[in-house]
Image (spheres, rainbow, N blue to C red):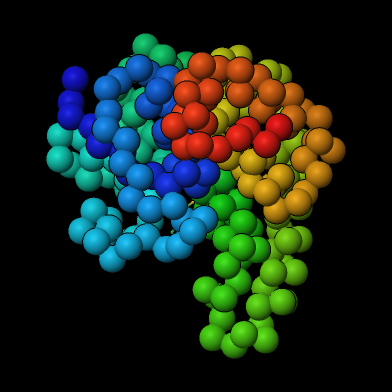
Length: 211
Ligand SMILES: N[C@@H](CCC(=O)N[C@@H](CS)C(=O)NCC(=O)O)C(=O)O
């Protein structure tokens, strides 16, 4: 098995790949560089990821950033677990979900709600940015609920999308949204949090499921 280092911050989007690392049962070094709830990543982190973002995985000293790429690397270490789906079409759907969750739900909706000041030089503009981003966030949560049909977002088995959706459920709760109004999303998360890998990732990160 390769030498793996995983850099994360508790409760961040890194929770999804963190869970997957524990799902595949690989040995890895878990490195908490800083707790983003308390402050920004320290300047020393720039040598790990010049983008100054977690998660980061290093596999035999090769650095990989961006959550879908990290998840692809983790899934490739345990191909029998089919974390990217069982068929070609399921794999395409896993990437469809991951790209939308990463770019739109995280990068546009949640990020603009939580950090409007990063998107304007005019402090007076923050309120409008937050208001518009909240609209997109509610549309995104509604969309997640409407896309869920069976027990899992893709096919009939657990894939990388299940824990990624869990991240956004937690964040929705943290922002004060009534996530229980999404019954299918809530049922999915209730199944996810029962998994031993999820329990141990939450314990190591020192966070609650918020279910
Ligand atoms: N597109 C990036 C997004 C990563 C990202 O935004 N991570 C957040 C934590 S959820 C972060 O590192 N934030 C640090 C900061 O904003 O200073 C990815 O997929 O990895």
